[in-house]
Amino acid sequence: MKDDLAKLIDKIDAARLSRRGFMGTAAAFGAVAMTGSRALAQEPKKGGILKMGISGGETTDTLDPGVADSSVPFAVQKQWGDTIVNVTPDGGIEFSLAESMSSNAEGTEWTFNIRQGVKFHNGADLTANDVLQTYLRHSNDESKSGALGIMKGISSMKVEGNAVILTLETGNADLPFLLSDYHLMIQPNGGFDDPTAAIGTGPYKLTSAEPGVRFAFEKNAEDWHADRGYYDGVEILVINDATAKTSALQSGQVHAINRVEPKVAKLLDRAPNVVVENVSGRGHYVFIMHTNTAPFDNKDLRLALKFAINRQEMVDKILDGYGGVGNDTPINAAYPLFDEALEQRVYDPVKAAEHYKASGHDGSPIELLVADAAFPGAVDAAALYQQSAEAAGIPLVIKRVPDDGYWSDVWNVKPFCASYWGGRPVQDQMWSTAYLSTADWNDTKYNNPEFDALLLEARAETDTAKRKALYSKMAHIINDDGGVICPMFNDFVEAHAESVVGWEHNPNQEMMDGFVSHKTWLA
Image 1 (cartoon, rainbow, N blue to C red):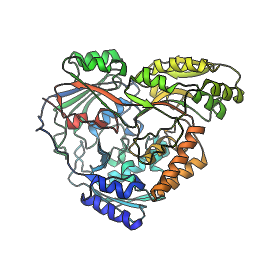
Image 2 (cartoon, rainbow, N blue to C red):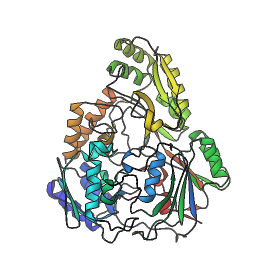
Image 3 (tube, helix red, strand yellow):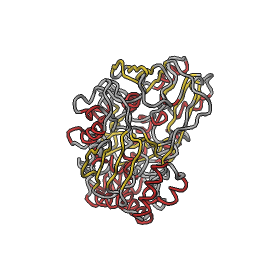
Image 4 (cartoon, one colour):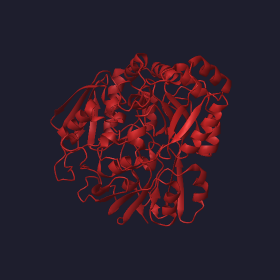
């Protein structure tokens, strides 16, 4: 198996192995083939300003990529920044700021050769040391980086010539996927000098930033990548109100919008000059409990709340067909090595009442914080949850809070709230980002040494069946004991003007994984 891994990595590096062939040989790692440049159906047209209406922005948003925690910061940094590799829509890996890579047979030492001739927006040359410093900053607990969990598995880093060499605690063939994480935008000196400078190597340069209002960019005339960034500039308008956002698209004030509410998607798709796009993937809507905070530190209470939610009702009434039922884990069938044998939890008010009684809870109100910013339809979903919990005798009360400040003052701060995750390309990245006890984005505050040990064991396991069995154990632990209530997996539902050409479906994240401005153009 070790020899096979080494050969596979060599073939990826040479772009000589199809995705189908690689998946058939290396499914144990969830690894896929390296892809080259994309084929375009028609010649892109250059020029114009792309205007996007994006919800999920706040006045407290920062330009530090490490702490990007919602849709607007995600969209902003996709304009100015690059990672060393990207994940393709079909689940492959393509080179970005790295131009080649290799690994030892065990997958414990990885070498990434950094592209030459690339300049940052400030005119400085990109070096391997900039990549190294970026990774060191995101490995630092004080950075509060959303990538901290995935960086924890790297034991040492160094630069040799134009290469960055990463040594892992255990072998991991998924490492390239982890390094595609959108928090890991490469910055001069890693961002240590000024993490909020928004200076990167991306196709657009920041010219104006008004958090919670508007961000503007101009074309990077020295972009190293010729096959992207066809606009003269980009504007991101923060529009948190769903009605105002769809109105802005229909009136021509913006060219594209994110997070279209499912209840209006079909109607909007019939509007003149508007196209609604949806793609299934790994995104999911959740209610999260801090397992280290009363009363959610009681397992019976957590199970009571899990049995008290009617998942199918939410899928029917909130998603309106744009998604599917969740099962109190962040993993669905879109992931390699998914455990299809995990029993589906269903709404059971009798079991919910039994667990609630066993918890010994005093009957005081259990407060769930929610805002429209959490996910499309979050307030309505919370109301449905309150009704189904009431049937089990659980005193769930809903507290609606402002959108502004939700991601800084509520999510990952308050013990019970609504949230969403866009998912990740592979299981290791999802588990490491949000469920490893030491991850900064462990938003359920879950701390289980057995789970952590299984995660590390699965990361190093090369046998497909054994690795799947380990992931199965992890899913069962989170489903039974964790603090996440996952009622539904959502499609990414977005809309754009007919004049926007080149749109492609990408299940990795919303808005073509943030690459709308890279790959589309105005007809």
